[in-house]
Length: 141
Image (cartoon, rainbow, N blue to C red; front, side, top):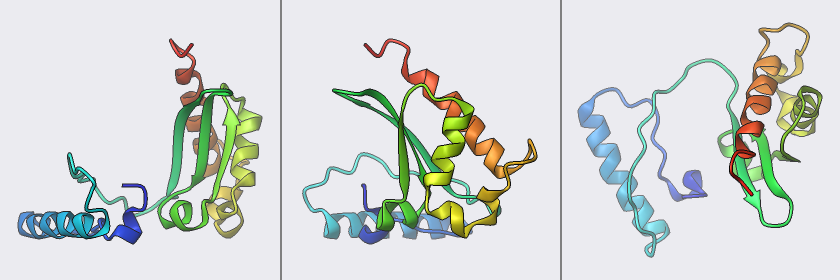
């Protein structure tokens, strides 16, 4: 569901199985209310990570441009503000760093800004983006 926050289908900090069952029922009801024509196939349950930088990295194949890599601020930033950058695959490390700089969220989060150390979030994010883009070229055309 593209607008998961607006649709009310996200639940955080669930502590036990009973809370998960309750959240599952609430999520299905919210999804039905938001998009009654939607066919819900599954509900994803993921571990909540406490620290770090929330980002989105994705790939789609544009019919005219070919494989495109998307990078952006994760969570509601991508949904509400469409805070993303796009590049044609494959990309280089410098292009990945430029994508990070293009994202508005890079200005509000010091975690994006420090690209000097190999272990910085900036370096890890650009590494992920560079590793994701070549995967798109295999058997694409």
